[in-house]
Length: 253
Image (cartoon, rainbow, N blue to C red):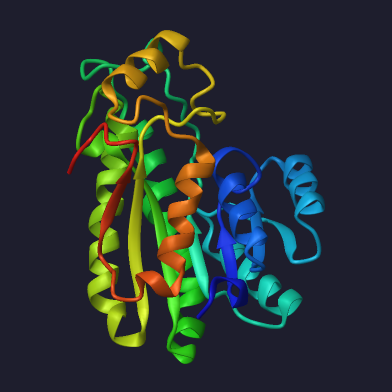
């Protein structure tokens, strides 16, 4: 299915990377669901900018009932079910090496927050949409990961472990859902310049990344969003269960 004919749910889409992904799909003519949790004003501003083929819907991805309701609202609004899910939502985390707890201070509750945001959130969106995908014989599930799994330059324990678990979930889903024409892939960016989560990152750190990266630049949210288009497009029809690192070559996996 061409990207312009798809109905795309992007979680955590009111700002940062999620907004860039929603914008990229809207530009291709797709129907776009801009999911948000708290940032109602930003989500509505984005939808206004994207036009008639976008709708903002509030839902906590950790709440199965709310996610089911969001999928139903999207289906009713666009008169077509969700074909494509981008699991992007990030729950209560910033990339701040100064405030990050070390292994001696870690609290299990912080791990649980990231597991619920990454795994439970993805499970809820998949379960809300997969029946319609199966019926159509087409679906695209795109999970957002991190290159910290391959190269933990800063020990963001709970965030990185949650994303590592999401990679395992990605590959298990790919194995199970492929028979129905549904592909499942992951995009693992590096530190992006700039999102709310990376707003506390110093220019010195960005400079270090630039100097160590073959392309000599920090990846932008818009550049990573282009990869989401690839995984949703017919060009990736034979690709599933993959983790594509999009960071300018900093990590070569």
